[in-house]
Length: 264
Image (cartoon, rainbow, N blue to C red; front, side):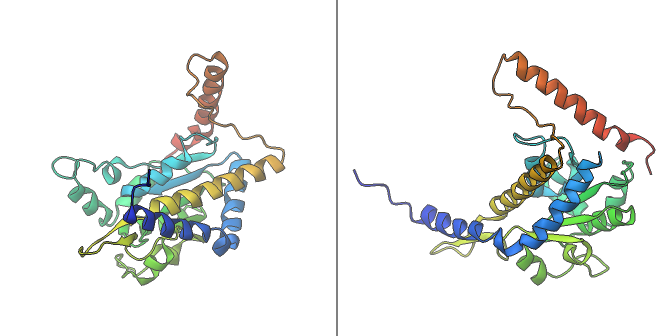
């Protein structure tokens, strides 16, 4: 029986795989520097915070809580900037996109936390230009946190800055990781259609984040520090798993507790 013809799926598959293949070698130095910052933070009982608007929230949650995650990663999820799946009406996309452009909003987020002296912030944004993104990065640096940016470098370089300062995330972050997405994110042109489809930033961003996670885990182990992993909770009814889960919760709570101490 002949295989079904899937021309668009096959083109996307080929194009996406080619981009994924190039993600590591093109940025070994940047990944090394990012892994060093994250390893130092977690080894010193600090936190690596993750922030992103809209779809970028997925990559924050890819790091934690997620199978294979370990204590030391912490998501700064602002629901007003991410919970827009209704598109229209309450919590709609219009409101979320408006808030991304609102000067001063990032500072109101950052004021809720007492960041530690060893903490790091990863800011995830394919375009790297929105006001809240720039101000989150700048606010973190003012508090002494190194900042790692995850962007589409080619898109960010070509995009017009939105912030009044004229800065983009690539101008503010200490280290830039590239998710490999093209300008506009989508890979696939469709015959007879004016628009492209098949975005890549989720695939590329997920790959980059997991490259970073795996490298940090190995470096911690090499130092004799055993990461506290989230165990697989799919094995229902296992007392051992339940005990490991409780240990993970306790260690996570202990690590994040200082964040809610003396806030700014």
